[in-house]
Image 1 (cartoon, rainbow, N blue to C red):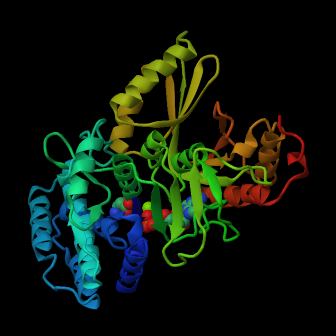
Image 2 (cartoon, rainbow, N blue to C red; image 1 turned 120 degrees about the vertical axis):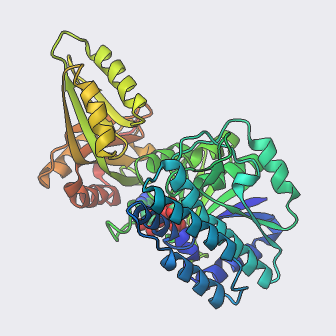
Image 3 (cartoon, rainbow, N blue to C red; image 1 turned 90 degrees about the horizontal axis):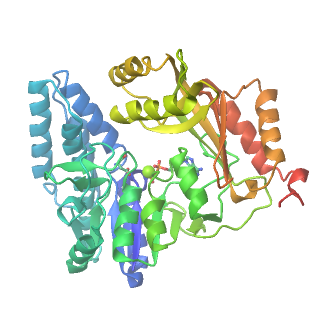
Length: 450
Ligand code: ADP
Ligand code: ASP
Ligand code: MG
C-alpha cells in the first residue's frame, strides 16, 4: 500500500487532473490511497472571499466558476459540487452579516476547497475506469485539537483512521489539510497541510511509502524560484528533511515528517509533470554529498524580540517568563539566544498587530522590550555540516562580502543546521550566495570531518 498526495498545482487544470489520475492508475498494483489539496489557488481564493465578506462583500463567483470550468473540461456531471457551492455561499453570507471572521469560521470556509477537489478527482478516476471514492478526512477519524488554522492530530487516532479507510470500497481520495476537533468543528492543519495529511494517513495505515507529488522534481538545494541553479537532492535523512521543512522549504509542511518518522516510512517527493524524474527519497539515514551542505532554506516575515532586564533578573528567568508570555499569546519561537541580562527571541512568523502589542506590553514588565519586524531566517542544512568547523567562517564571509550582517546565529545540537537571522530584503542575496557555497565543492570539505 502507498499514499499518493497531489498538491494544488498538480491538479490545477483538467489536463493536470488527468495526469494525476494516470499516475494513480499506473500505481494501482501498489494499492494507493490518494490525498489531494484544493485545486490550484482555491485556498487563497476562499481566504480572500472570507476576508471580503467580513467587510460586507459577498462574492464566491471566481471559486465557483473555476470549479465549473474544471468539471466541464473533465466532462463530469456539472452539478457535482453544487451543494458545496450553496453551503459555501451560506457561510460567506453569514460572515458578511456578522462582519466577524473567527479562526473557526475561516476553517469551515477553507474546507470547501478540499471537499470539491476530492469529489472532482474521484469522479475523474471513475470516468477513467478507476474506482475513486471521495472521502472526507474529518468524517473518518482524523481528530485534532481545536487550534484552528494550525491544528495537530490527537494521539491514538491511527486505529480508527485505518479501520475507516480499509472499509472504503475502491481507491480512497481523501481531503488533505482538514480534521475535526472534539466539538465536531472542522479544523485545518496549517497552510500546505495536505502533506501532513498524507503522512498521518500513511502512518495510520502503515504504508510502504508516502509519495508527495508536486511541481518540482524533489527536494532541492534551494528554492528554485529564488535560484534557478537549484538541483534536486536524491536522498535526505528524516532529520535533514524535518529541519528543511521547519525552516520554511515550502515543498513540505513543517510537520510532514513527524508521522513518517514514528512509523519509519520513507517519503518520496516527485514531479507530477515529469514523473520519470527520480525525485528525492527521505529515509532514516542520509547519504553524504560532496558539498558543504545539502540545502539552503529561508523563512520570511519573522519578528525579532529583544528584552533587556532593567532589574537584576537573570537571563534564565527572563527567558522562562518570556516563553510563558509568548505561549499564552499563541506565539511560536524559532530561535533564542541569551547574554547576561538580555534575551533575543525570533518568532515563527509575523502575527497580528493586536496579538504582538498585547505580548509586548507584558514583556515590557520584564525589561526594555523591543520588536523588529520584516526579519528572515536563512538556514543551511545537511549532515555534511557535522564537525565541519570552517563552515561558520565561510557563511559569515559570504554574507559579509554581500554586505549582510547576521543579527543572530544558532546551530542545532545535532549540528546539521546553521541558522542566521537577516532582514527580509536580504533574502534573495543571502540565499543565492549561500547556495553558491553549497553548489561548489569546497576544498575545505575534504578530509575535515571528524
Ligand atoms: P504543492 O502545491 O504541490 O503542495 P508547494 O507550492 O506547496 O506545492 O511546494 C512546491 C514549491 O516549493 C516549489 O514550487 C518550490 O518553489 C518551493 N520550494 C521551496 N523550497 C524548496 C526546496 N528546497 N526544494 C524544492 N522546492 C522548494
Ligand atoms: N489547500 C491547502 C493550502 O493551500 C493545503 C495544501 O495545499 O496542502 O494551504
Ligand atoms: Mg504544498
